[in-house]
Structures are given as C-alpha cells and as structure tokens.
Image (tube, rainbow, N blue to C red):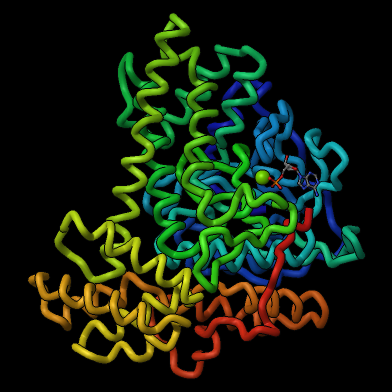
Length: 490
Ligand code: AMP
Ligand code: MG
C-alpha cells in the first residue's frame, strides 16, 4: 500500500486511552461515494483511493502503512444516565494526518467491525445511517457549520442484522479530533487525575493552543464553552436537531459529531423531535441550548481536579465559567438571526423582533427555512412579501410583523440590493429535508439506486444558490411525505 503521511498523536498517549484493534475484513467492498474535494484537501490521491488498495482501506480490508488503528475509550451521560464505559464500539481510528491547511485531521472508519468496546453490538453500520450521516454532515459543512466530514461510503457486501437484514456499509469520517466530553468523563470517573491532565494538555495542544500557563485548564473550559455556545447557536439558526446530545456525542473541538437520528425541522416549533428513541423530548429542537449547558456542566465536573487543589474553589471557578454559556449563546443566536433578517447594525429591540417572528411562525405553522429565504427575496423590494406571507396560516399576524421589520430596515444604512445579497448568503434555500433524505436512503437500500442520493448531495453542496430544475428539493414535504420519526439504526 502506498503510505499516507500519518502522524498519530493519540496513540502516543498512554495505553489506557484506547485499544489497538484492526478493522475486520469484509467480503465484497464496493465504493459508492468518494468526496473528491475533501480528499484533495487532505492531500490524498484520488486515483489511489478509487483503486482496489484505496477501497481496501476505506472498507477495512487493508491497513495502510503508517496507520495505527485504535478504538478510543470514553464514557458518557446517555439521556441523563451515566455509563462509565462506552468507547468506540463500531468505529476505528486509522490515524491522523495534517491537511493542506496545516490542520490535523482524524481518519476514522465507522462500521468497521467489533472492538473491545462493542459490548453486545456487532461493530457494523447499516447503509441507511451511513448515507444519512454522509448527506447531513456534508450539508452542514456547506452551510458553514463546524462539523465532522464524510470522505467515503463503501458497501461491505455483507448484511447486518437490525430489525431486518440490511446492507452493511462503512463510512470514512474526518474530524479535527474524536475527543468528546465523555472522553474526559471516562478518566474522571476512574479518579485518574494523571490521565485527565494528559488528555487536557493533548486537547489544548491540538485545538486550543492559545490556552497557556498555569490557568490553561480554566482557559480550556472557557474555550470549550464558547465553542459549544457558538455551535448550538448556529444549529438554532438553521433548524438542525442533533437528536442524541449525549455527552459522548459532544466534541470538545466544537464540531457537530455523531449524526444519528438527526434531522432538520420543516414547520417551526420548538418542541420538534424526530428521534424515535427520544420519547420524552429531552433533545427537542428548543431544548438544545439548555442541554448543551448541562453537558458542559458535566465537562466542568470532570475537569474539577485540574482547576484548583481545593474542591470548593474548583467548584466556584467552574460555576463562574459555566455562567458565561447563556450570554455567549444568546449573543451568537442574536447575531445569527440579525444576519438572517438583514440587520447589519444592532438595536436593543432586535431581540424582541426576532422572538416575535419565531412566535408568529410557530402559531402560523410556517416552514422555518422558506420563511427566511422568502424574506431575503422580499428584502430587495418594498412590498413583495406575498410569497412569504403565504407560508403562514396566520397571515394578518405576519403582516403586522412585516411592518415592524420594514420599519427597522429603514434605519439600516445598507442599500436594499446589498441587504438582499447578504440575506441570500445567510438564508439557505436547500437543507437536507427529512423526506428527501429518507427517499434517497430508501432508493439505495431497496433498489440499489444511488441517483437520488447523488442528486441530493449535489443540490446540498450549494445551499444558498437557486438551482434551476431543483425547485422540488426546496419545498417542504406534502402531508403524505412527512417523516414522523428517525432512527439511529445501531
Ligand atoms: P451512539 O449511538 O453513536 O451515541 O453510540 C453509543 C455507544 O454505542 C457508543 O459506545 C458506540 O460505539 C456504541 N455502538 C453503537 N452502535 C454499535 C454497534 N452496532 N456495535 C457496537 N457498538 C455500537
Ligand atoms: Mg456516539
């Protein structure tokens, strides 16, 4: 195999951080999708990746020179309950490489066979969840949201047993790291202060090099809080629902990670939940900010031994850091919605204006994405919000809100044209709508037809551009197309 310039820093940590484990081979790997622009960013040879040797790596059938395959150890709170031992049960980290921009990136196979952390699982992934993660993570990247990426998807030629037999697949995932809040919890739960310190120093060197000196662990805590606040604020401005915000699914690098039963909201409502396993709506759309704060409190708890020798002092340092989450999240959210509404300047009443629109949308059962897109289209002219108005079941209420918005816009210095251009860059026309994702998965799984998957990926690569002939990909689902539940499929 041709060597990839791996530089594996995680395996240089002590052995209790991971288990060395090779992927399990599969019988008939078939490459179904390769992300060419991402491969080139990573400095990987596209032709090699498509060749049998490359496909062998992407399916787990061959480990390239320089790789050091491991499954990492982590713990986590799942739906509020603590599991001291989770770990990569169906994911194997091949190694790290430094990309063209000098950024260190993990190359991980998801669905590559059992590891010592698999518990009762088979270590495998079904095609459906692999395609969902591919579509949604790449859509998030195109929308400008920090996220893990999808480099490739490969069919294994083997079936996996879920409720039925399904085609098995492997996703190659790229992330700036796979270190989770749960990774810290793993060592905290064992009282392993030495490992905590090593892990914290590793994360600082890798993600937050500005954290230096004696106060570096508090600086790390603050940096992770800021990154998560900014991330979740972005989710809330595009209608993204993660679905399983367990602490083992929250990256300390502030990237969206572990796409399971995730979905984008169509009709705006804060209680929207799709995940079939989220019976009580713990991870509903509107709960995401408080859940992120709750997860960060678990992160702060894990870091306590590093914050101060005295326990009470450590707690008060942690609490002060955590108190910054709400204002930082609010600032990120308000800035995001100001951009969406074409407001380049700041007025105190903007928060109220944003809130009023969301409440009007909720009462009017309006489509979240299209409302902002049509407002953008209407922003160039004085009185052309009819297309937006028609999205609301309560058009008179929308009219009143629109009047307030127009008044507010009259105090903006930008020209109508400049404002419209900025809004069209802030408000996507195309999001991975649930019914389209499901249709793409269904065609692939049931008919081995990857055309809808490819078409969808192509559309979502340019979410802010009108694409003639693709109008159907922008519209909300009709009543009979609506997807009520999503599954993690593990
Ligand atoms: P997740 O649903 O990604 O948050 O996974 C929760 C835990 O279950 C992690 O430790 C996973 O590695 C593990 N897991 C999920 N699916 C499987 C599977 N098919 N085989 C083995 N472990 C799994
Ligand atoms: Mg997970």
